[in-house]
Amino acid sequence: MSNRTLAILKPDCVKKNLIGNVIGKITDAGFKIKAVRMTKLTKDSAEGFYEVHRERTFFNDLVKYMTSGPCVPIALEKENAVEDFRLLIGATDPAKAAEGTIRKLYAESIEQNIVHGSDSDENAAKEISHFFSKKELLENYPK
Ligand code: ADP
Ligand code: MG
Image (tube, rainbow, N blue to C red; front, side, top):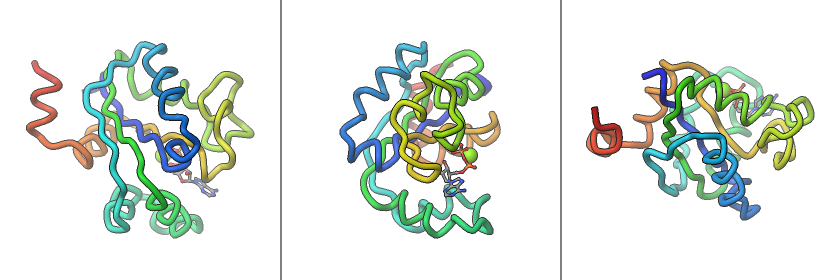
């Protein structure tokens, strides 16, 4: 499992027409796309995905943002995927993100930060199954 992570190109990424730029950065960094689709999250789905943040002050705004337009979930594969992807996207707050990271390059604010990346192998597995069926995953991760 430790070779998988879930990315989401968030609604601001789609609205700013940056899908191609961001996917280019991801594949240039050596990640393989195993499953991808465009979808508009429902309130229930966004709340479920971000359940761990339910008590945070920003939770309602986060759900509004994530349901404001289509997003692009992507299941990725690479050795050390979770850690390497977090390094590629940079800190949650783009003002604090390292030079050259996706959030530093493209994000506007700590909320509208272009891209999601899983934070652990356990959450990567859960998050991938939030968007992709068992059948798709068996087909796309043959072992
Ligand atoms: P990350 O996406 O870097 O793992 P978190 O899991 O802490 O960050 O937060 C989830 C998402 O919630 C962030 O990517 C961002 O869109 C939003 N968010 C986080 N912190 C804040 C905040 N202080 N104010 C507004 N939105 C926030
Ligand atoms: Mg997180």
